[in-house]
Amino acid sequence: MGESGWQKQIGTLVHISAGDDGEIWGLTAAQQIRRWNNGEWQPVPGSLKQISVGSIDHIWGVNDADQIFRWFGDWQEMPGRLRWVSAAADGTVVGVNAEDDIFRWNGGGWDQLDGKLRMVSVASQKVMYGYNAESQIFRWNGGGWDFRGGEARGALSVGVRDGASHLWACLVSSSKQVVLAAVTQGLIGGERTALFESVDNAGWEDRDGMLTQISAAAQYVVGVNAAGEVYSWGCALPAGDRPLVTRQRGWRWCCKCQGLFFGGHSSQGSCASRPVGVMATTIVPHDPSGSGEYALANSEGAPGQSGWRWCRKCEGLFFAGARGKCASGGAHDGSQSGDYTLVHNDPAAQGQGSWRYCKKCDGLYFAGGGVTHCPAGLAHDGSASGAYTVRVIG
Image (cartoon, rainbow, N blue to C red):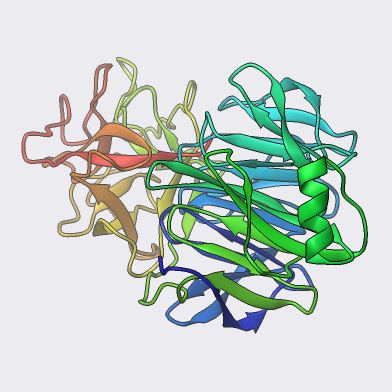
């Protein structure tokens, strides 16, 4: 990040959010979603009134009906209703509803926190700020909210850079001199937006801005003004082409054969595990009991190993370098499949590990426990496999 000063960027947005990994997303006045990439604001499907980017793996938003959505490669609706949501790169997600009640995501639902806030911003599990209906700013102490001092109107955002928390707030007054005096005296009022920064909860420093909304992250501080103009603090927006990864949901784990199959069809495919006495020509469906929902990358340029296909006969996932052995008989049939990419040999990847390639049937199976059944006979054989990670979304 550069030394100081606001730099005007291209585009017109009413809302913007930056993640710690350099992901920057925004919303237009028509609530269309945009993502900064390769020097332009590229469209993303969906419609939101507010969005928060912790990183590419932690993007959340809400719409006009206060429905909550998370980006997994497409938008998945999450439980609950929130007016505002804030996501951090460590997976912390906190939001407030229409009654100013505060909620934190626990991985499967929402836990209500004490207090009332009109708006909240999180940089990590430990670094969280917000302001209430009276514009008073509060800081999370690990178990509750402490009055931080100062008052905010409009936008507030906190980020962590080089180990220090940076709290940015839009304060409203008739002049910046009045704002400075009001902050010192614990008072605020007036009509003009002025921008200030506080490092590690110290005093406010004037940042000479007139913004209506702001987002602070590890690498970038970005904001928009009342005219929708986009600004960044101290540096230009990131350069380079980072393709957006889209994913297909609806994949399931079979508790009988341990394979991964597409569960979006009523047939549930064909499983290699069959009861004793059942003829080989009889179709035995996969069993998704106990399975979460998995999402597979299906966009060009997604990081990992491409070349995986869906078999229209057994519904399973197989590697197209060879057609392998299908539980429905013969070879797998990927003639109606798109190309899927799996994260490969990356211990830091988000998702569930312990997935392996079987060199006998060319399918993907879970090696983390349980007896496996291979269409080529006996158990799957992962001796020639790398380590695969599959994204779990529910």
